[in-house]
Length: 416
Image (cartoon, rainbow, N blue to C red):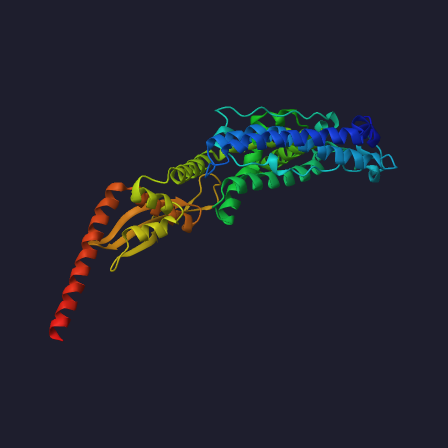
């Protein structure tokens, strides 16, 4: 095996001040182009689909220019190092201390924008980015059990870095997309994206496992005369391989992060397709209602009402004196079908009053009782026939109460 000195990497990207200035000019030009087009929407009261498409089109140029400046910073720092370091090797050298890590790129915000339906691919997986550094690729595809010396490189360190990148990037995508989701629910979505079961499936679907060097016990029939790894152990190492491969993509070349981000965004978008589409439709509907201003007072109230929690809105819609709206668990406890281990709550919303007793208005299921109750309330609000009937009863009840109060006041006045 051959060694790659650190100077071999930085000699390929020596940065001069003139190059940095060129990259700055490129960033300014990209930002200026975006600004000029956005000025045509200066009088638009709220964001719309046109503005969203405009941002997506320009963000690619801006992110590329920003990435070049980030690489300039790394190269400029590397040029001032006085010693030659060895950062990657798979040979038999015993001087492990000579290995030095490359600078880790922090994903800029322009790489981690929110999901939209356009980010969800079709039925097939998005293409797997290649690892441009052959040494890192070989390391990412080598189990530690296949090394003979402590200095030999396996996927262990890359897996550790890849795990951090996946954690950060999935968190950012979720945070940017689901602005009103609770922290606990966001954590549950992230768990679906980065758990071993998900990552090991990706390793198999992309065929990365067929290129990886594993000890014999990880093969289908196990080591002859020896032990066979458990299914959990196999799932764990396959997940580790995927994390290492992601790290190798990112660290393998200056554009690695810009290649990995949209790929992961598309890959994960398939898993959260249902949630993304619901969120996008909800936001788009809210923007349309605000932009149009509603048709008449009723529509204006509906548009404003969308800002309210469904439970609050349901109470404001049918609530009055003598009306009780309650939320209760329905059925036996279940497990989330996606994770297989997280609890799944089913909650119903019930009405007592307006001539009804324990009337079920709606039902909802979610990973938390609070969210399940909100879904149940939203379902009730969307049942136009039911709401129309209850609103009529509410009006009659209010009129009866006002009439009774008026009569009581009149009798009091006559008695006085």
